[in-house]
Each structure stands twice: as C-alpha cells, then as structure tokens.
Image 1 (spheres, rainbow, N blue to C red):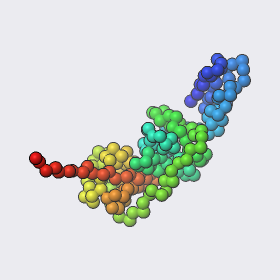
Image 2: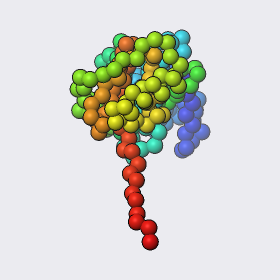
Image 3: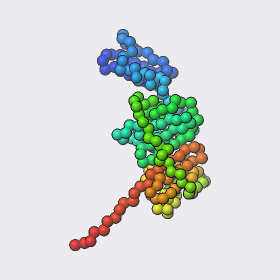
Image 4: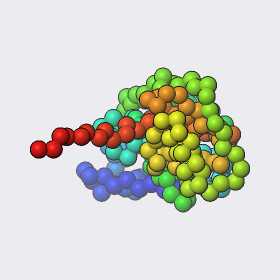
Length: 219
C-alpha cells in the first residue's frame, strides 16, 4: 500500500509506503500541509490483509454498522479499544472482541475491499458515543444452532422476534448475523435486541416502529 499526496502550493509529491518511510520528490522540504497526514499515516495506521481471514471477517462485521452519512463524524468511524473493535450508526451497534496490538483510538475507514481493510487514526477531537450505555441486560433469549443459509436464518430470527411483538429492520438483522450459531437476547418490544455469536461478535439492534394505521370516517 503506497500513498501519494500532491501539494496545492507547489509541485511537491509525497510518497508514503506501508513500511513507514517517506520521502518528498521536490526541491523544497516536506510541505507543511502534509505534516498532519504524515504523522497519522506512519504511526497510527491499521492494515488487515485478506490473509488474516478471521480478523478481517470480524473487523468487516464491525464496519457494517459504521454510518455512511451522518453529521456526527464519529459515527462514520471505528472505535478501537484493547481487545475490541466497535462501530455504530445510531440505529445499530456492532462489536467484535479481537486480540490485537493496535493503538486504541478512533479510526477513519480508508479502505474496505477485497484486498483487506485499512484504518487511519482520526485527525481531530472526535468523541465516540458511550456505547456501553445502550447495551441492555436481557435475560430472555432463544438460540439458533445448526447449518443455515443466511436468508433462512434471518427469516427464522425475524419470525421468532415477531412472535414476541418485536420488529427489526431486515437489512440490519441480516448484517448483524456473523455466523449460524448464535443467541438472540430480547426484552420488551421497545427495547433493543442483541445477537451474540460464539466467535466473539455482538450486534445490538434497535427495534423499528410498526406503521400506524389510521381510519377515517367516510363522508
């Protein structure tokens, strides 16, 4: 992975290889506009190649919950803690417990492709929501075991929740499933559900409000 940055003030060209060294192809020294990017790119970048399949799958599971568009920039990013990756878009929360040696912090998503995932430490005073506060402590659950296709598993969970008066966004439900053996924790219909997988991933999904039907007296 190599990054090139082109200056707007001069013709300088900065190259940042993955190894952590850099040089400038210019008569002048390192341009001031690149200083912040250099510091972040060299010291605070996370790269997870496709060869590390298990970690990559877990991190990609987390990235599904990162907001695509939101005025709160922190929701577009990933929180990296000791042994954990977290993301939320305000409607769902994905957590993956992963052993790693990465620097804790809030990271931007630079790449999520077939080649792997690249994250870069966020530049600025970003504050990630206190996600622990929204995780309910449900005692009731039902368990899904066996070998299921994704569509069948999603449908079965949706039916199981519907029987308890709980409705979940079907796309969020499908993206919150990381394996075919998991526990589905639930409470009252207005409370979030939790999908807990054996591999260490967890999805907290807010329920959807069913459409209200209003009858009007005919004239």
